[in-house]
Image 1: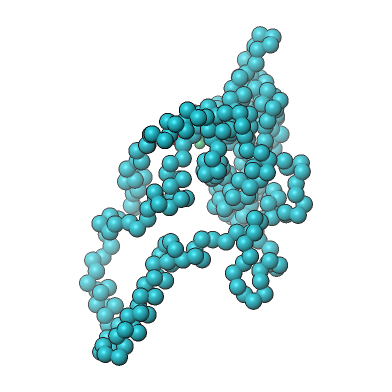
Image 2 (image 1 turned 30 degrees about the horizontal axis):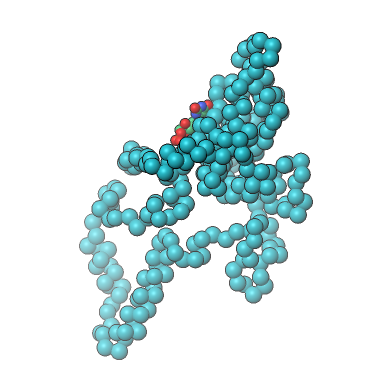
Length: 291
Ligand SMILES: Cc1cc2nc3c(=O)[nH]c(=O)nc-3n(C[C@H](O)[C@H](O)[C@H](O)COP(=O)(O)O)c2cc1C
């Protein structure tokens, strides 16, 4: 895939950082950006979710109230009223779980995908094609990335490349096999994507932050594949960054191999099982603390 880069789409090319200041696609009349496959717009502008949406709704209903009451109601001193409300409120002492959340992780498609995603340990042979992969990789560009360094990339392994990985893993683990025998582990999927964390020197962005960004790209990849209907499992192991394995992936000294994503179709039996199974979500309190 990377060998046949679409020259018309520089925005998706590796190491692209930041957005262009002169935006040729922005309409001159100042209206919202044109939405294309190469340029997307945040859902916030639709004003349907989040505090922004709530404020818009509140403003709309307040405007209605003003219209309805302006003729008769006495003018309230709104500044004094707001001060009184603030004075009456108890000081915030920590999490307040008494207010019910308006966030619905079942109704919201993104939150639903996030909370239901699961790894598929045995995938079928059908795989996303390289065009599918390009689309998915584009969607990962939203990963949080200090200074936009893009410190990650994926290496596609299909067919014979998976045997080469088996040989490298064997070499790393000093495994010798009988003639005709081979390491079957990399053959568990027809398509593997190796994730490389590729930090660069930056006075403001320490190496660990760049590894965190690369890991984030991996998690987004799993989520994107899940949402696109593909099965995936992230695997690594103690040999992942051994010299023979690093050599195969042509890693530079500062780079880290973060493992491989084993990708394929979700087998029918999984789909049947998933249709009848639910997974309990953990108690969120275990992940939340205050100072
Ligand atoms: C960096 C990384 C490496 C992993 N390596 C392996 C692995 O080698 N073998 C394995 O069984 N699970 C591995 N896992 C865990 C699985 O990908 C998966 O998350 C786990 O089985 C739990 O399943 P779930 O994703 O459905 O919750 C790894 C996860 C991460 C993030």
